[in-house]
Length: 156
View (cartoon, rainbow, N blue to C red):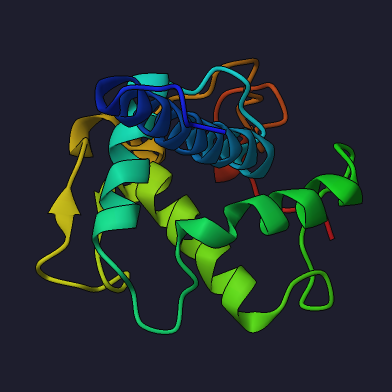
């Protein structure tokens, strides 16, 4: 197959294949992130940093990023209208990987565990837990629309 290729061309072919695999793994990571966070506008550069950190920093008992394609297939089979995940939907390792992915996006850190003091801070100020609502948010009010209602004696 590669008989007529120079070593340079062969190296470029292998490099291109490796880049394609990396790109597809990252694309899988982003698709899963969008599904889990119900957010279609995630920052790709930030996602790349989370993905690279998760690949670089292993967590005990959590499958690596190599298992993302199988997880993506399983989760996307549940459908877009699914409100929540149940224990029956995923194995323990898959659920741990989901939690790790959510931890990265919501806390802005990637570590060996959620309480890892040596966790790598990726984007603390852009962590999901600090983002405001992106659509309408109803402000709850328990006031019956008149001032001083709380000072009245309740009706028996």
